[in-house]
Image (cartoon, rainbow, N blue to C red):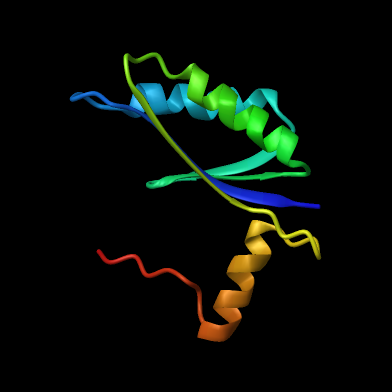
Length: 104
């Protein structure tokens, strides 16, 4: 089983969040998960919800701030095994092109 999630962990501060977000992302290295960070969060893939929740907890705990905002959205498809890249591939097949457009 592959569990896919979107995790967003951020300190509630006025200054740049980058350093604290980097700590949250780095905390994922201690877990058996795959991940990719994007501007809005980090997509995580794990074999079990237990591993996913443990990794998300570690990312949340890694942020050193008086207030931390964490959002976790989980797709736990239990009837078949599909990873995040396959989900994007299916959309791109429907589009007939890559699902991105970088405007310069």
